[in-house]
Structures are given as C-alpha cells and as structure tokens.
Image (tube, rainbow, N blue to C red; front, top):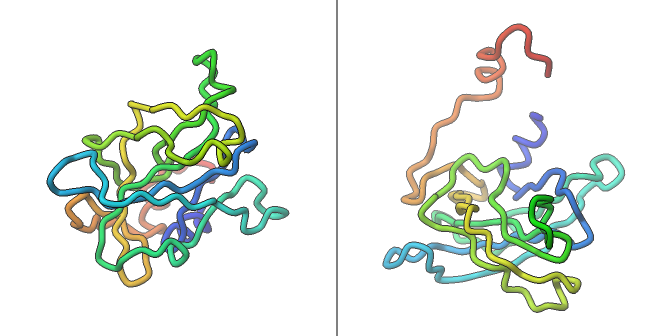
Length: 172
C-alpha cells in the first residue's frame, strides 16, 4: 500500500479496474468558477501499465505527461468499461468514475458522459454516471497534492501515524 501512496504523489493511479477490454483513461480538466460542472478544458489521456509483470492490475499516468499547470486545481475521473452488474446493459457501456483512492472529491460536480470518439471506446456506448463526483487534486511543484476545490491543501498524517492508529488486530 505504501508504494501506491508514494506513486500517487506524482502519478494518477487506477488499481484493479474490473474490465480492461477498454484501456482506462484519465479524464481531467479545470472547473470554471462561474458554473459548477462546466469545464474550461477537457483532456483525456490513456493510462499505461508501468510494470505489467509485477503489477498487472495497476494502471497509471505520470502527472508530468498531462500538461498540467503548477498551482492549478484539477477535477478528474477515470473512463472505464462499466462493471455494474445490476445494470443489465453494463457490458456495452463506458462511464467516467470517481478515483476510488481520491483523497478529496467535489460532490457539486458530477461525471459527464465520456467524450472520446467511438473508435476509442471499442464499440462501447458512452453513458453518464450521475453518482460519480469529481475527484480533486492540486498540482504544485510537480506533485499531486490533496486539496479542496478552492486549492486549500489537506494536511494528511504520514504513513506511520496512520499505521499507529490502526487497532492491533489489523493485518496489513
């Protein structure tokens, strides 16, 4: 787990997407101050498997490859093949989902429908996911920092403080 937390400082990480028939993507932009849910920019980046033999379920993209501006707050989702088995048409759909390991989300901004050309979606239908709030991150000095949507950094304890707070019966 500590490796993933270290990677999250400089990379967008998606661990264990249920279906990978579609290469997962990072869908990222800056929220407009005038309208919640409106984006000034939309960009989509294919995630890669940095070490497919050692970590076959890990997908990522370094923040340095995403043309981000230092000091800017970004809202993002991952574009993935839908794996919701309660939705009978999930096998043919693609959605934007909240980062499962996001340290901050903005519930005012919901996931838009994926906007990639259909060729990128491998025949899957883009659908909206009204239950997926935007994941939020501040890019500053080459680092991805937890923050709220206004850019106020969230001060988190280091790993040792978190581990020390766990009950003694916890298995890591």
